[in-house]
Length: 106
Image (cartoon, rainbow, N blue to C red; front, top):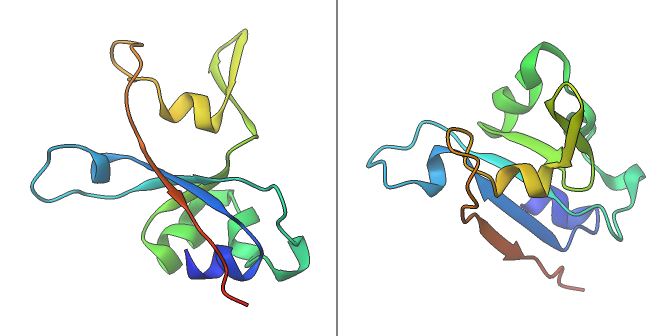
């Protein structure tokens, strides 16, 4: 969160096994709101998606996606990552995620 805060990000959403009842979560997935983000201050790894986001996982132990970007759900269906994170992948039902409002200190 600190790296995103430096760039001006104010909202982050967590998903993955981190937000399940698993006693030992394996990982987390996050999407972040790009509103107000200064790209020049953004850690370049947040824009690196090669090799299944290996650079992000190596540095932050999780995966990060801009919340407004689209992801393919079916060959003809797309959702934003924020919408995608709020859908159970097995049932298609709505599910909760964790939303965090970040406020940079002056």
